[in-house]
Image 1 (cartoon, helix red, strand yellow):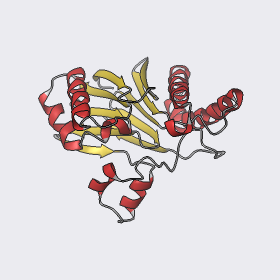
Image 2 (cartoon, rainbow, N blue to C red):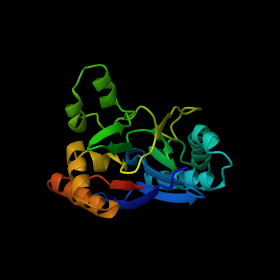
Image 3 (tube, one colour):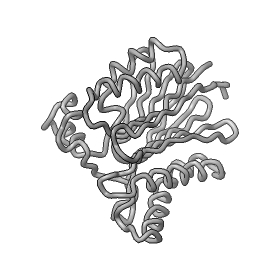
Image 4 (tube, rainbow, N blue to C red):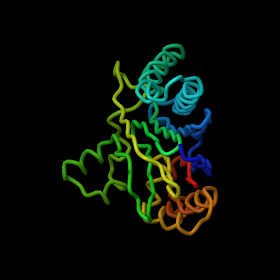
Length: 245
């Protein structure tokens, strides 16, 4: 296994909202690293509790799992059931919901789990060469050709999700993407409050101009605030990861 090292940074801000319902964190297990970002659904109430609960559940399961393959297949379904149980205990059935995007890196391989519209990007060779697909109404309209990709960010239904952890479904559908990892790769996990005001071309340009994950993330965070132009700003959160040889 090639000894690849990572440089990462985490940023989260409540924007102009009274509560930050985003949550992001990371954990290390031997030669593997796990990064998780969750965006609680504020329109349903208790989103901050849901996002923190799921992120901590995922990281706890990561640190104690015997098999990353099993973790990849089971952690989000189990997080969904655990969150539903937490809803019942809190008397908040149907109110505590969240998106989730999880990145696991181990040597020259990695995988991503996601549900909702929090995203993972991979930047390689001067381009965005991988991006998760949102589980949202506008993304569905893009796929059916009813709107163009560039219209997704400003679509009036952009906050309407088709899937989320803690919803009223008994079982949860999520996406698992496996990929190789190389020195020079960069990954970005981000909530919709972060990727909506910052375009992929802007993310890439700042990546190419900044030497560290922290500097890259700081520049993107400032740009997110600037591009919002003083409008009511959602919580915005991101995790930047750069892979070194």
